[in-house]
Length: 449
Image 1 (tube, rainbow, N blue to C red):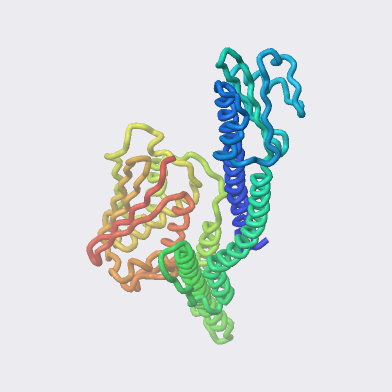
Image 2 (image 1 turned 45 degrees about the horizontal axis):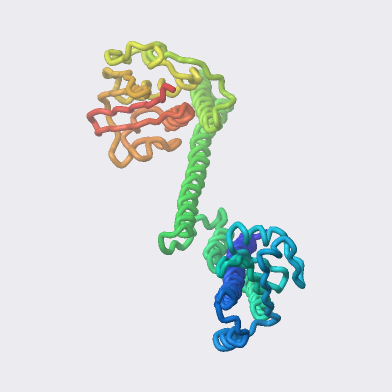
């Protein structure tokens, strides 16, 4: 069932409930008012009859004159007078329940209705004699009015339901029309035209939905562009060593090449093969760290011990590197510097950052500082090397991107993107600040819990 039909059905059901309650109230109060009015007319006749009965003048002509002058004759109106001696042997043309008489004795007045016939009885004392006076009459006009009201309410109920259904359908179509436009526009957007955007009008929920779709399209377009650039750069990086290897193989295969040339060609092939293996390993690492991390082994790792291990590893690769580790701001509690992590991946991520700091500072001193504040571990790696140009900082974590001032240094532009993926896998973040030709500081933030 579509949303428009659901809204229409719900609107009709709510309208039916409200109209039913309103009609019930109208019927109840109209019914109560009609009966109350007729009962009061009967009570007036009872009171007049009592006044005449207790008067000294027993002239029936006076009684008839008073009734005819001041009161209209009700349909099938009858009057009954029960003297005190006959209280226990009451005989009327209709049998009234005993509770009616008990109520008269107790409350001095009682009412009773049987279908369209109304009875009012009242107990009177006076003129040295007690009596009960009962007046009865029919109320065909009141019942007819109630019947007409009932028909009107029923007809109005069904008419209102039909109207509410029509209004609900129109209302739902009007309210959902912007949503239909959004769906129609989204269906037009494909991989070939991700630059298209939805129109945003106003500030209501539909406008927010359109803006949300536009933000999602922005992310998708960026992801597609990044993927295309990644594939293009990867193809370029892979093609370069393969081209060199192919050329050196042709050179080595020449029959007139001497032993020295063959050795140099084979050495070049070996270097480029190692380079190609490094690129492929890095690409595999980038792909693996892009997953959710559920398939990686996790364990409790003390970061201070991990940093000492990283220092030894980097010193083996760069024997001339000068790495200083500052633990002066460490907390006394061990659990504040222990996190749950994949030790191999985390070591690779931080080692890449420390290794870059050594390489791009020409082995000047590199300071690694470990701090713990508010359940967040901070690992700051600061060097005094070539720095990063301001225009290159925003691209430094893109795969295969290298800063414009790194042409003299060997690299592939994969280390930092790989480190960022690993840190994100550990629910952390990386911040970078750099001044060209002065210093660069990269700070890794990792949650303790």
